[in-house]
Structure formats: structure tokens, C-alpha cells
Image (cartoon, rainbow, N blue to C red; front, top):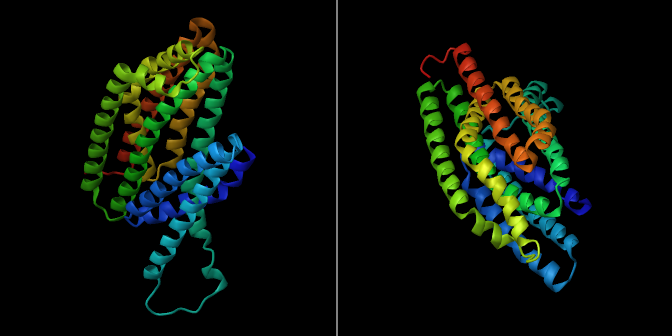
Length: 318
């Protein structure tokens, strides 16, 4: 953890540079650098663990170095693009040009709710992790693998949602309301299609995927059973949560950050309130059921708030 935390500045730089490039319409360059970084991470994992025998610390160092490479590459790309954003006529530098309080305020108003969203979601997840830990090592291991698979799906949908937010914000500034409507519809169609493919894959091939990642033969059956139980309860609701994630992206795109944070809080509150009760009533299956319940409430909040604020802002064309 100490080694990994040391790499957070590089992670911040990468996300900042990625946001700048993506905002300018270049999403390929960050993807290229991230692909290079991920490949280096795999190679360094093998070198540090299998050759140098550094163990878990070697994995952390591999991640740190890979993040550093990705952040420096994207930062270099931003510096090259920055030259084209400069005014043609040179202006006299001043202290006021360094920091604009108005711009800083706007960035904080947009950034803090998103930051709190991730904080609240992590806290809710830690609360459920505490409950799951009480069911033994096999359940913990099965959940760990299945939750990683779940994370791949949610993060993919979040990437689509983030792209939608930028698309809506750009077209909102240009008064292109019809394009906003098209963007929401297309994003929702992509999310639903992707979710459907994942649901089918997890329901019919989830056991094979879990077995690939479980190496302990003594606990393999119990671990796979626990992970498969999580996937069978949670994965069908990807078709619902993708609607929530797209609605969240639309809320961020129109600048309704407080409603966006409220919708996220409703999700977390359900997890905290229902976790212990569901566990005591239905065991580990009840814990898995907390995810769908939280998603149902969160989706209702996100979609309802988006429709409300869309009307409030008088986007008649939407």
C-alpha cells in the first residue's frame, strides 16, 4: 500500500492530462499511452516477482513505474498541444493570469461532487467488505475475483458515461440541443447492448472465467461457488445500472452536480442500511442482493433528477 500510494501523483497527472486531451477531442493518444503502460506493467510484474523475487512489493513497484510512464507521456502530449492554444499575439504576463478565481470556483463545483461520489462509493464498498469478511476465506476469495469482473463492466460503462458528459457539455455550450438528445440515445443503446453481452457471458460462462483465476485446488470449488453466486445475482441488473450510469453522465454534462451527488448518495445509503439486515436474513445471498437493490434506487433517482433538471433548464428540444 505504501509503494502504491507513492504513485498517486503520477495517477493524478495522467487523469488530468487525459481529461485535457479528451476535452479537446483526442481520446486516442491517452489510450495509446495507457496500452503501453499496461504492457510495461505486465512485463515488470514478471521481472520483479519471478526474476527478482520481490513478491507483492514488486507488483506495487511495477504499477508505480507504469503509472509514472503513462503520466509523463500524456503530460508531454499536453505540452505539445498547449502551444496551439496560445494567443497569436504575445501578452504581457501578470500574476493574475496564473490563477483565475472564477475558473477555479467552476472547476471545484464540477470536480468536488465527482470526487465525493467516488469517496462515498468506496466507503459503502468497505462497509459491505466488512460483512463479507465474516463468511470465511473461500467467500472472500470468490467475491474478490467476481468483484474484479464486475469492476471491468462498471468501469467500461463509466468510461462511456464520461465521454457522454463531455459531449453534452460541448453541445450545450454550442446550443446544439438535438445533438444532446442523439448522444444520450446512442450512449444508452451502446450501454444496453454491451450489458446484454456481458450478462449472457457471465451467466453461461462465469464458472469457466472464475476457474481460470482460482489456483488453489483445495478451496477451488468453494471459491468458484461463492463468486458464481455473486455474478448470478448481480449481473442481470447490469441492464438496469447502465441506465443509471448514462443518466449520471447526462447530469454531469448539463452541470447538475448536486443532483448527481444526491443520486449517488441514495445508492450508498441503501448499501449501508440493507447490508447487515440482508445478511442476517438471507445470508451471503442477501449480501449479494444489496447491489441490485442499491442500483434500483440509484437508477430511479438519477433518471428522475435528469428528467426534472432537463425540463427546468428548458431544453425543449430534448
